[in-house]
Figure 1: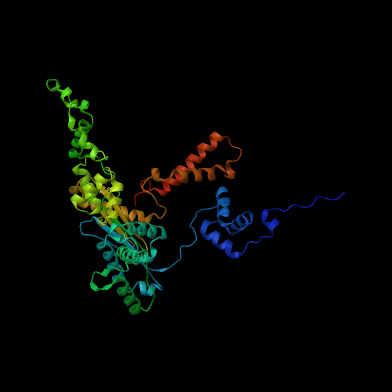
Figure 2 (figure 1 turned 90 degrees about the vertical axis):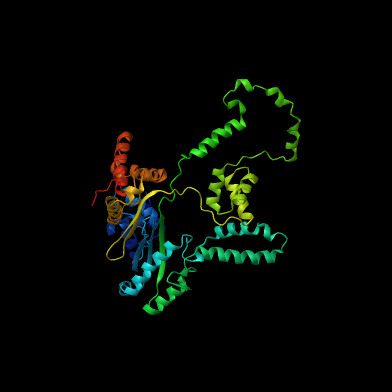
Length: 433
């Protein structure tokens, strides 16, 4: 009898795949696992690094997931916090060598750049080339629909819109801004001067800005707005108003022949409150009359009113309501070697506390705490997304050391592991340095 043919030990053998040294090196750098484990993982995953990473994690071998791509570069991190601690900026500028990164000209440039970004709140990109295709297309549609272009030939429209968009995107890009210390030059020109002076290529890599209270949700504590809402109920439903027995002359109201003028316009009367006008004005920068008209035309819908103003060319900005005038402080910490930097916002209930030396010291210490804990990615464990938790739970449940255990026991072990893992990523559960 013929002996049965030997089956391949793995998918890698079946396909003839061979693991090379570079792949093992990359996976080791990412996972922290041993060389042999990395080789076995890559063999099992037929060279797929993501599948190999999952294989290592299921066996509890992967110590980390550092993600390849963080190039070891030279340069510096610089920060700027305004004197009132309500605005802060942190930026990174790269150089080719550490020698240049330690030069005073380079250090002064990075510090000035952080201040430049802080002074231009409209900046969201380093250069206009970073604006996405989708955003450009959306902005073009808005510009093409503007009333001042109606009746113009398409080729003329295109040229006008192209010029407007170029100007619009240059205003939100850092490179095209006038240099604070010399308004005859742009940031891009100053960068080129520093490159020529230092003899090395310099790259403005990234920046972040914090404005105190930005993104905080509004609380509906406006007294005038509350009164307006109550009055509106009585306007729309007279029966809801407090009953006044002596004035029960309702039959006269039925005989009013003056109801006919309402037929002149099909639009129902929209009551616009002063609060709504104020909110839209803060968002768009348009005049009071224009803001009110936009709200009337769009039936009180804030988003439609914003679009209406944009089409008319009246909206100067779209600041998105919701940035509260909060109290507190923005603090920064940059390590002595300028390679790690942190910018943090801490809120308080009153300005009295915010200017207190104890509060200021605490905010600075929090920034240093975050810098000392590179694993920290969120403030509390409750911020971890549900889909990320579900994915991690699935990986933990599949680990070999849990095989054969009852599901209830498995679930308890996994919950404990996940709790520990996410506590290591959250700021509030860290040991105070």
